[in-house]
Image (tube, rainbow, N blue to C red; front, side):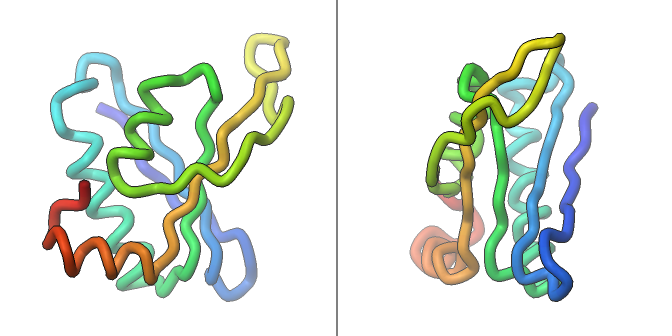
Length: 113
C-alpha cells in the first residue's frame, strides 16, 4: 500500500522530518489523510516533536496538495535539492508546528482541513 516514516532532525527530536509514499492504486482513497493524521498525532503527542517538516518535488502536484490538505504550510523552495533519474529537481519545504496542530484540532476536532 505504501509507507510513512518519521526521521529525527536534531538530538532532542524537537524537529523531525516525515515522508510518505502511497501506491497509485490507493490515491484518492482517503488512506493518505487517515495515515497522515495518525503519524502527525504520534509525532506531536508521543515523541514530543515541536516542528514536523516534509518535502515534495515541486512538480509533484498530488504530493504538495496532500500536504496542504492536512494543514502543512509551505515555507519555501529548496533549489535542485535532490536527484531523480539523473536530474536535479527542486523541492517544496512544508512544515507543521505543534501549536498550529493543536489550534486546528481544537477548531476542527480530529479532522484537520
